[in-house]
Image (cartoon, rainbow, N blue to C red; front, side):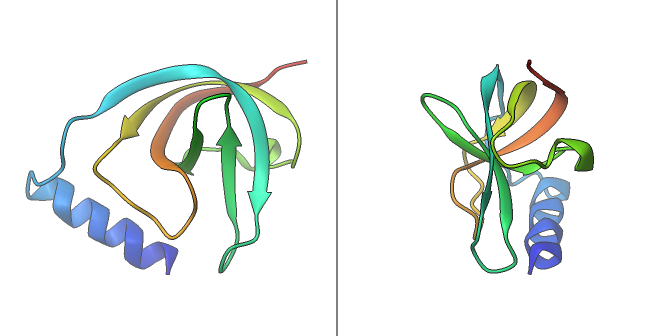
Length: 93
């Protein structure tokens, strides 16, 4: 399923059908959401963010992270939250 969603997103982007992208940065808590195959999200005080770019070593439920990414407000997923492509992410002590 995730492959199908990624393929659709890539096809739309290749055709220039995606909307505006928004740079986003902040801190949040990594959470595992048990939906379908499961999703990793970052919960901030204002958003739930899901998508690509969370490294495997940071896929730990409950850790705090600092991130920089691109928010895609026109994309949707079967996972909860807004779609973001993470460019930088690091654990916060």
